[in-house]
Image (cartoon, rainbow, N blue to C red; front, side):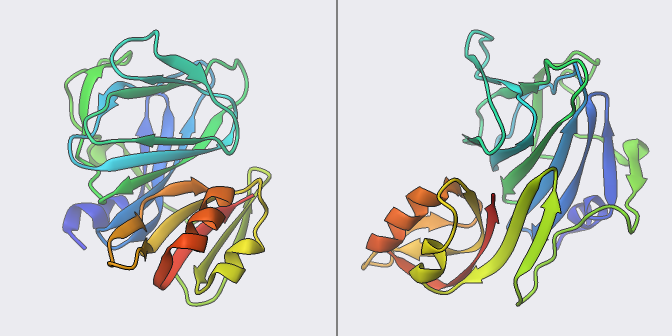
Length: 227
């Protein structure tokens, strides 16, 4: 793992709109960030030139802008999925007066400084990602997801998060159809070994059940299921 990623693995990054920290990482391949946006605050309108990002909303109903025009905005809700290709500008706003927005952000590859800000309410336009000046050390009370061989279950923000190795389709068929899944490692392939689904993807569980009927789980993959 590179030195920059090692730093962000151990610190909470303070933002003018809230905070975030890396809650899970798969070396330099993928990082999962726990993002909290305070009431009446918003992220900058920004893009990531290299990495693909995705969000699963855990708490709240954010207003999400995709692209540089603010007319391309809609409200989201818990367990909603948002996937953003490299280079696509986006912003997340909390319109609520009292409730904090909480989301998991998935980035592939793990590149915290892969950031371009177009507009920002807090004077950060065209500035890069926060430096150590804006960080505080993680404590034992701050939750981190672990990569282990056994199943791990976490309960946060009224959501159950299950991380486990998926070895066959029967495991997936047992998951709740209302849940969503993120692939943390591994892939699905067709008969020609072309990749259909790989780490960093987030998908509805019902969709994954359909895909695994037609495509092969290429070695056990590590999945995060959120109910």
